[in-house]
Every structure is written in C-alpha cells, then in structure tokens.
Image (tube, rainbow, N blue to C red; front, side):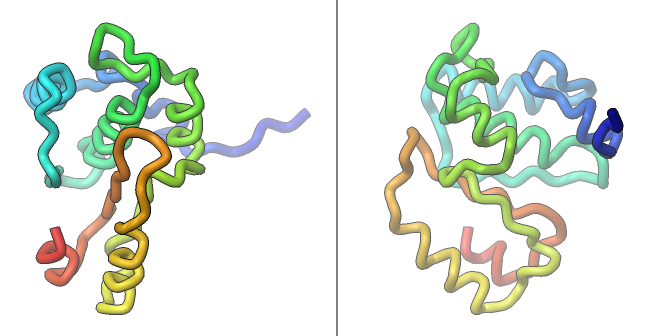
Length: 139
C-alpha cells in the first residue's frame, strides 16, 4: 500500500507547545495569556519564512478552543475542537491566504462572517503570508 505524500514540514509540525523549538519567549507569552485568561483581540506573528509563525498561531487557536487542556495551557489534541483544527475543518478557526486574498471584496467577505457566534470558545482568523495594508488596518 502506498503512503500518501506529505511535505516534511507538515509531517513534523509541532502539535503542542512543548514540541516548539527556538521560540521559548513567544511560547511562554502565549501560555501565560492562556493561563491567566488575558487574551488580546489580535496577535501579530512576524519573522522570516519557516520560523513557525503559522504553527504557533494554530497551536494557540487549538489551546484557546480545546475542551480538555493539559497542564492548563497545552491542547489535548484529541477533543473534537483540536482534531477539527488540526484537519483544517473547524468553523471557528479560519485560515486565509493573505498573499492571494488582498482586495476589498475579500475583506468584506471576512467582515460578513465575523458576526456569527463561534461554536467553541473563540472564533479565530489566521491571515497567513504577506498581507496587504488593508488587512493590517482591519485588525
């Protein structure tokens, strides 16, 4: 039986904050936000390609919506919310490719969906890639 091809970076993408390497200060900041329930309305992760910005955003989204947090800050990776986010099927975590969705109409479409209540604890938008000035202003 053939194995499905998977990009190496996706196969070994961290599934918990403990597995994140080289980002100790941001991991500590995120975990403290979760622990003390001090969640800001927006977070901006910046850095060079391959440093884990999207991975950290996804882990943060998992932890915020997880139904069975481990050690008060780690996502369990087994509850419905965690598995949906990991499979990119969550209605509460929307990932947008900022590089290709840069127009005013794209922003209006996002604004139309923001009003819907989340089925979990938080509704999270992850705008990945280089985003336009219009996206940054909407934050």
